[in-house]
Structures are given as C-alpha cells and as structure tokens.
Image (cartoon, rainbow, N blue to C red):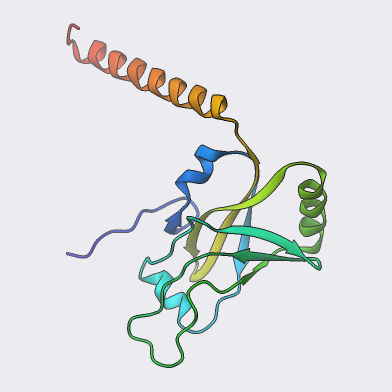
Length: 163
C-alpha cells in the first residue's frame, strides 16, 4: 500500500523544518513560489527534500534559497540537477522591499519552514525569524510539557479514570 503524504491546508507537505521553530521565534510568514529545473519537481513529488541547513538571502532585489537539498531524481539521466544549487524564490516587489528592510534592521533572518505542492506547483513557506536564547528554548520546552500534562489529566478526568 502506498504511503500517504501529510495533508496541510496549503497542500501536500514535502518537507518541514521542525528545528527552525525550536531555534527561532517566527515573526511573520510568506508563501513563495520557487524556480525549479527539470527533474527537481519530480524529486519533490516523490517526497524527497531536506530543509535542515536551508536559509534565504536577498541579493540585488531578489530572494534566493540556499542549501536546500533536493536529491537527484532516480529515473533521471544526464539531465539531472545538482542537489544543493541556489534556487530563486518568487515574490512581489513590495514584499521583497519590506522584507529587505526588516532583515537589515536587526538580527533577523529568512528561514524556509516548509515545502509543499499546491495545485501542481511547488511552494515554500518562508518565515522571518529571530534567534532564541537558550533560556527561551528551555521555557518553551517547559510550557509544552506542562500543557501536555494538563491535557493528559483532563483526558483521564473525562474518561473517569482516577489518578
């Protein structure tokens, strides 16, 4: 039986960057298109991509996605792409200008949060991120653990299980 892919409101999720939400505070997000060549879209449709070290930069008024790993297509030939090439992201000029100002202002960066397919096209969810300190990460882990325990206790109470 074929493995089902995760469904999101945006479409079929190919890859997510779970570590980004742990390491950064996400201030805002944008949906961007991505310029792909040849066999890259076929690899994405197979569900193969890695966002682990990926980041975005703004150079000469254009947004570029760097270090995104899309492996070579297994059925490809000499026309295969290089796995870690720099890829252009598609955004409106006004969005790029506002992003450039926000990134230049402080210690903020552009981080890809997920890649998904929407209506047959590859999209990247790009987030404006600010780095977290170690104590912020510990507080987030503590809050998540407390919320999980509260939910577990409420579930037991509704099921009639005495703790």
